[in-house]
Amino acid sequence: MTSHAVVVTTGSAGDLFPFLKLALGLRDAGHAITFVGPQLHAQTVQQAGLPFHGTFADPAVLDDPDVWHPTRGFGVVWRAVRPGLRELGDIVAALPEDEPCVIVTHPLALHEALLCRALRPDLRVVLGYLAPSNIPTVYDPLLLGPLRVPRWVPLAARRWLWRQIGAHLIDPVVMPDINADRAAAGVAPAKSLLDLLHDGPDLSVTLFPPWFGEPKPDWPQPLCCGDFALFDPDPGAEFTLELAQFLAAGEAPLVFTPGTANRQADAYFGHALAAARALGKRAIFLTPHRDQVAAHLPPGVLWQSYLPLRKILPHAAALIHHGGIGTTAEALRAGIPQLIVALAYDQFDNAERVSGLGVGLGLTRARLTTTKLTAHLRALLASRRLAERCKTVSAQFDAYEGWQTMLISISKTISKTSKN
Image 1 (cartoon, rainbow, N blue to C red):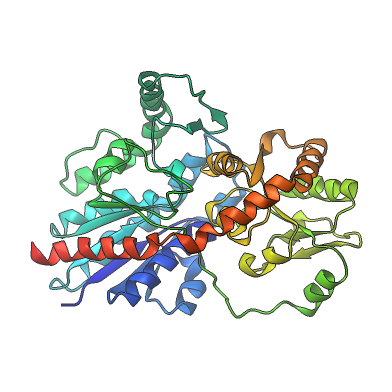
Image 2 (cartoon, rainbow, N blue to C red; image 1 turned 180 degrees about the horizontal axis):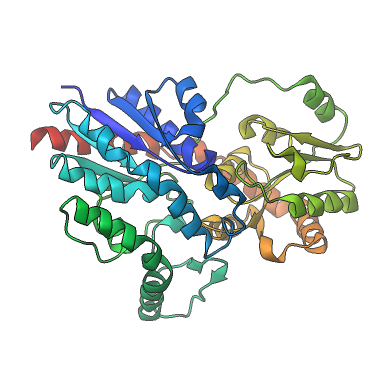
């Protein structure tokens, strides 16, 4: 019997690519796929050969000054993606009733996925966690935004902290919307978003390996530890003549990127240019938003709109970036040093883990100065021990086999639907 997987994501390319990789894996395992995501990603999804349903997400969110704020950013994103995600019920209702169905969802779309059970009680929901910090835990490393909770803080106090965060920072933003939708669907109200994340899915999967984010006793169950879901939208792309000549003209450059979704990185690139000059290093500035970079760059500094990280990073001396999980993973795979300049969301925790692995350093964007950036880069590039650790960690990409295990676990979850 044909089974159907509805794969749902929202957000930037960093949110899109892991779920595209997952959808392709499920398709290759024999499941019919419907991919649901922001309309702005239509071309990428269609080029991957997947049936696509585009949803609305307000593009103005990227210009909101709070979108990269450590605490206010979550609310900005939540409000921007809600209208499009409400289309999920209609998509599921239109699927053949005789096909076993599972929704594999981004955490921000979990609420809508759970509501679909009111339409199809046999529906299974799988929640995909992009990064370790997406999973609330009281265990180390515990970062609340940029603030690290000391190891000596007892577990009871940490649980209290999470209750306060939920009650004052998360639930006031999301629960009015969630419970209004649940009431309209005839579903009992939920107490908190953290409860929904922990108890709502039939299966949770990690889109990162356990050597990057070790499972904790309070993580949701059942849980399957997967692997980094790295996707290249254009694996056959060749370097332009300009880039090839630049790489051949001197030593390996520093690669700076604040992420494809960041339209507020003028100051970042100003510090990057000054730091590269101070160190006497060549550099590539990577952003689709050309107006963020100085109009006239000096020799030895090149702007590029987009480059596949898998191809460019082996030619780089180091990657300086925002700390998105996909970008972080690509640097780990390439075996090069990385400096994470974290702004919000999972980025602070990813920086902490990179530092703990001994393969990079971290800074917070709020405290970024040319002096600090230069000093951190000097230390990063001078460390032989760090360079060796990068090679060691890179080797783990071929040693861990969590990807197939995760696909099998999702397939088993779908098969449970057909038996009920």
